[in-house]
Image (cartoon, rainbow, N blue to C red):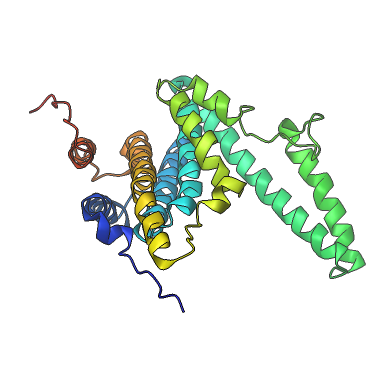
Length: 283
């Protein structure tokens, strides 16, 4: 009978990386969860604050997965973080139209809530779990939704609705971003991270490391170590970068936030990766 091979988890193998993520999480707990934050007074403010909360929750989940060697699954959430940043950048790209874009964003959110409800009722009706009256109400809800959200109707899609609040796909959002790094980041996201979002053959087989003997299996594990560390570091550093960028965009909604803290985090990341960080203006 083969003996199982036990290895330390990523948090134990690379404590220097997870000391950074823990520092970030603990600081944001202080600024967000343990502080009374005034209610945003504009649609734009609401979206900025909600995006910061969403990013923080994603980051905590990504960190938990990475700590226990589930970097493959963390890529799915990291991709979500990237798209969150792109949508937020699209809203604030033009200061004069930002509030109007925020209103469109929120209306699209209400549309999606209605469509989710319609799809759920339709599913239950197909299973025979809905009465005739409920099915009739379902038809009324569909008609009402089309009359309320006319700006999102589309003849080009199977569903009859646009798939994006702003009419842009992810590539277009990345291309229109003011950051020159978005397209290179997009290429990483949609060449590697998307494989895991869609459960491609590549994503399935990365979880396998089997040999014919315990010794052979151990050699395979050792051979995978560098690749595992590389991918774990990529997911953690990108997710951290995107979190900090989202936080910076929503900075006025977090009263205790200090922008200099972002640079302190980046310095620690540079040091951890063995690179010299750029000198800061106040140093």
